[in-house]
Length: 325
Image (cartoon, rainbow, N blue to C red):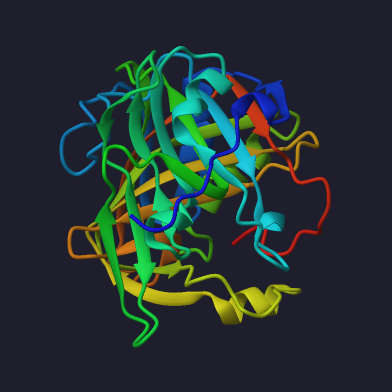
């Protein structure tokens, strides 16, 4: 399982919290549908009782994304640039209690635990943590590159591996079914990717409100651009261009399932605006950038409105290098 490294203790991590504004899901649905229709040939957003998300193609670690929904933004890109801080290693079993829950579903995007592979990789957190901090369901995937030929693979990590390196953007809930946003759209006609279209629609529709969404979406057809972080850079990453040259980019075929968080109108917590990681059944996986076949693409998904955000171990230095990566 690679070299051993201690995780940081949750009690030693600074935590800031802030309430999200909470308009009705129906009002959110109306705003999102309007925004998506400006970017896709066909789009609909409705409020529905969530289907069982443990089933394919969603494959989550709990049936739903309701019950005290919240976002957790931990660490950040400054812990990766210009030099990696390997000691920034967190335990996802702590995440529900960090946000005031006794147990919960943890899904989202983050950096994989580098000691597991003894190298850097992408991660798609997807696990259910019980009250005793045991993991009852572990479906977390990691995507990694291979140095000799820049190929990649994706794998599900063992149940006992619950670490998260450097940064993470998580949606946490009690994992219950409930009323959520159901989103469908196809044939992109605009220049904005799916997740940024959601974020920008919220910012335009609710310019005075601080909002957060999290959930899962599926790309049923077409292809999409993803990146996978290779091993940590031997050279300092000082600029966005440095990061761009270091990352490995791929065009990956559908079907793809993607875990996603986004925030609109950050009040000053230095939150990541949007972060989405996904995987497929043929080894695909990594950080979603957008579809590359607009005439063919078809998205469907379920999102919920978060009630609170928890900003954990916010970097106290650094600039905005790669903040939108």
